[in-house]
Image 1 (cartoon, rainbow, N blue to C red):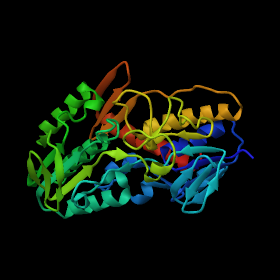
Image 2 (spheres, one colour; image 1 turned 90 degrees about the horizontal axis):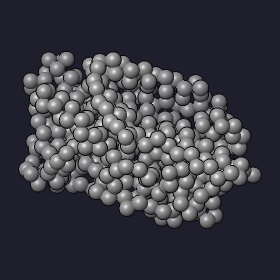
Image 3 (cartoon, rainbow, N blue to C red; image 1 turned 30 degrees about the vertical axis):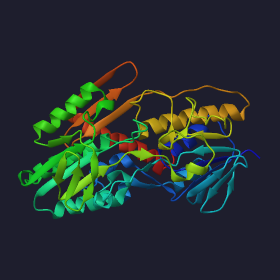
Image 4 (cartoon, rainbow, N blue to C red; image 1 turned 120 degrees about the vertical axis):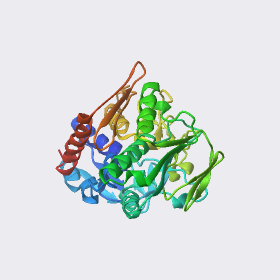
Length: 378
């Protein structure tokens, strides 16, 4: 019996399910994930400022699963036997005819003392703890930084770090406490934000300069302590350190037999099929590496596009037709500052950046619409 197994309940997995059913898929779909919920990561930036709670951004998917006729299994992926078409999970082995890998990536945590930092993109708990720490401080130095994976330029998340930094500055100003804090932005890159495009990078650097945010750029990171960031260019005293390290693929893919990139991600072609396993294994979102420009990001928007493309090609495979649908290579993000928004757009032909307070509200409107579709299963 034909059967589709999806691993992961994030942007890529949800998009693939919605698109499969929209394309007329009647094949049974099973989804395995640690929780029957979706964490809306773009809204984590508002948690430290008290504008979002866990209930706001961790969305139960029970209604979504009912609407789209998905059988949910609670479990974590532990391995894969692609020859036997069996996914190994904490809930037991699961057979599949078509497998969609949408489990996301993971963050590199090799730097000494990284436990002394707040890694905000990992979920609600670290950003809530970061907010509590910030509110408890009477003054001091706040250090915000990110790094990448040298083996794959796209395996980083710089955009959210800029948001956490700029939102913290705005929050402190609203509280009348900004003069008590020194804000520092650090990264081993001499040109942070380069993947966003030169115009966007210049805009963000000017924004930080105007806000009195000090830069510590181009120095290799050595590690962290409870009161400092250690770099080859000298230490940064820090009373609170927010750090987003580079990314790599899921741990379980290392022995999966699937083709992997040098950075540990599952290789995909431009149609979201896994080479050597066409017609049986597909990948979308942060778990994969895809053909495209080196600035192509790992972000929810692209995961959505890949999930949709994957679904269309999977449907072709089910019909015995080899389709070649591709996804748009583009970067779209709104860097929010609480009182303003900076839109950054880039594709292979052009790039653009502009700011307006209306973008702050449009980002919240998009959140409401997107999560509404997940909550009601629409």
